[in-house]
Amino acid sequence: MTRLAEVNHLTEAQTDRIIQMAWEDRTTFDAIREQFHLEPGQVIKLMRKELKPSSFRLWRQRTTGRSTKHLAKRSFAVGRFRCKNQRG
Image 1 (tube, one colour):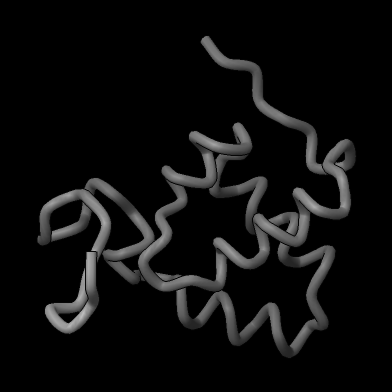
Image 2 (cartoon, helix red, strand yellow):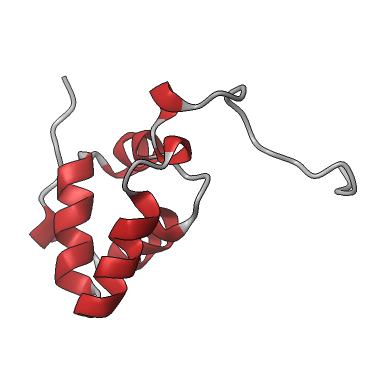
């Protein structure tokens, strides 16, 4: 069992990266858990603490019920999305 990280003990760089990942539509809470050992509730707590109230409300509206934020709810294959015009 992995130990969960404490929100208060994150570095500024880690906090910034978590916020960036949380805002991305296709980054799942599972990816954040895998990388930073934070449960979705801890991510929400961090976002509430770090964002302005209006930004937090906007983020919650975007993530609530969004299937792309939850790996188990995704209807497409797991993996990196790549546009057909993207090279490599």
